[in-house]
Length: 353
Image 1 (cartoon, rainbow, N blue to C red):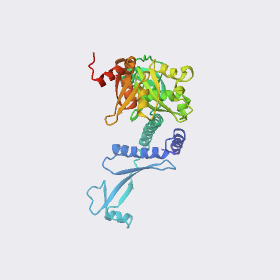
Image 2 (image 1 turned 90 degrees about the vertical axis):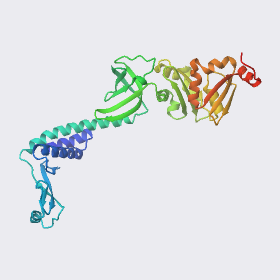
Image 3 (image 1 turned 45 degrees about the vertical axis):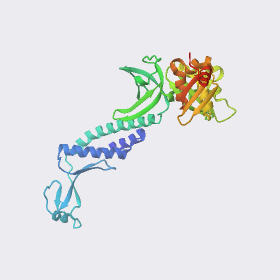
Image 4 (image 1 turned 180 degrees about the vertical axis):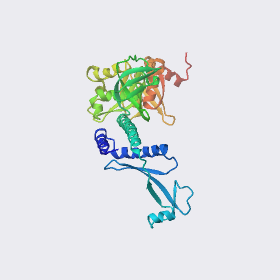
């Protein structure tokens, strides 16, 4: 250990942002283990690296006692008083016990500790970088397939697109670029574990934020999203400025903005509706493209009874109930849809044909 080594640590601190003090403390701890392994496992020792010269010294720490039972860990009060009359029982005295060839062991450990700390620091930096991007969109290159999971190369890290987070209509090919939503970033011993999704409602939200300047600057706000990935989504939007049409802003000139999102989602249908603070209005809009005649609310049960024209019933319900199901998710109300003749027959008490 020498001055050049300390200069190298200082350079490392400057270039990689790894504290020189942290490295030296880690090295001292490693040298304690090395000393116990090679020379004496029973002793209580401390290793000190001089911050100016780089000189390494090992000190055995012994407790002052009246009667010595283990000379490796204890020193008598009488002997301690000979060294310094101020010593008392239970004080700690340090004796230098640096072995002659300890410099060689120190050099070997220094390399291992520094390399390990560099790796840990780099993993930490990468973790912090991606942890800040939770809830954001990342773009990477499809690297390989592991069972049904897809590994995406992000440059400094790798993301996992699990089978459950893949859209049904997507076709994945190695080497292609892919956008995904960062679900979660976990710290592991091998570096950050980045979990991404293409089915999460947040993915749809972020795509619109990228395409619609009014959402990005806060003029238009996305209030709610209900999504069945790969098939259909509903998104409720609201404008802070009454002069701005929130739906029109999201659709864009000639539908260009919404079409860009639809293309990224492989043709997923997207209904954009205007959000309202009035539940009746919001629920009626949520069943778009169906036309709604009336909405009655049972607030205690949080049930909305919706009346639609007979020729709009199948449209309101949607294929396999999808439109009604998404509207319920979007609004947070259970929706009971009935057609006009059906409602009238119930009032008269007529039996359905």
